[in-house]
Image (cartoon, rainbow, N blue to C red; front, side, top):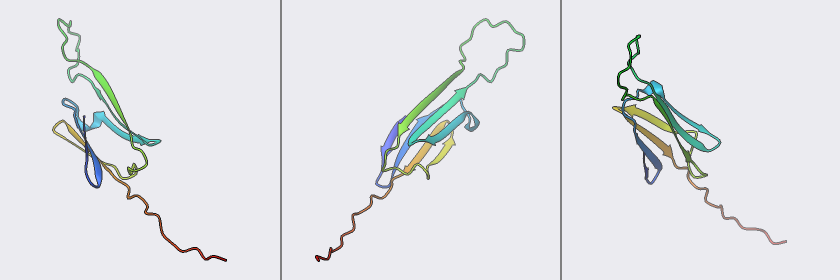
Length: 104
C-alpha cells in the first residue's frame, strides 16, 4: 500500500493481484477506512488427492484513521488490473470569521 497526499485529497494505491472486485471490501466506520479482501483458490478439489499445494487461500485487512480533515462520506474507489485506487477528499478547514463586538 502506498499513500499519497495531494493538495485536495489523499490517495491510496494497493497492489492486490489475483483478486477480483467482488472479493474486496472498502468501508468507512467511525472515522476508520478499512480495505479488506479474501482470496480463495479458483481450483476445486474434485476428489483428487492433493500432492502439493502452493496456491494459498488468504485474507487481509488494512485500516486507516481518517481524522477530522478528510471527507469519509465522499470516498471514491476503483479497481483495475489488480490495482485498487482510493481517493479521499480533504475537507476545507473553516476560516474563523471576523466580526466587531459592540462595546456597551
